[in-house]
Length: 153
Image (cartoon, rainbow, N blue to C red; front, top):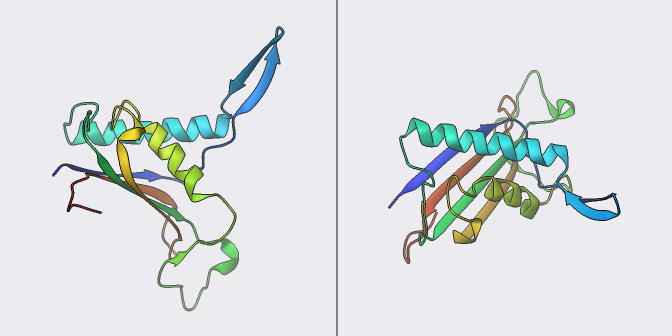
């Protein structure tokens, strides 16, 4: 069973809402710069990892069906840091900071044409939003495995 894992450094980003504009009497839709840059960074991390392990692009061509775990680790806010007794572990992030589905959308869309032909190949999706331990850096970890009848993440 084929599998793939990549770590994308930096604060996890969510897919932004499409923006509308009107130029020359025609309406158009564009992606905001923050989402576009985060998607490009994720795509670059995917390509670097595929190059490192010498896998062809896309790594999971059709008709492969995939299970995907997206682990979004947010840094601990400065106000919650402790000097004498550091916080040892992670905790679930239950804020309205960013929705799990918008986080997943950005990282799945970034994999189109690189990890898979289209993100419609993902039949099982799990998104974890966690606040990291005290000295744990912010990052996103994407785990992908081929989905089997008995094989799950």
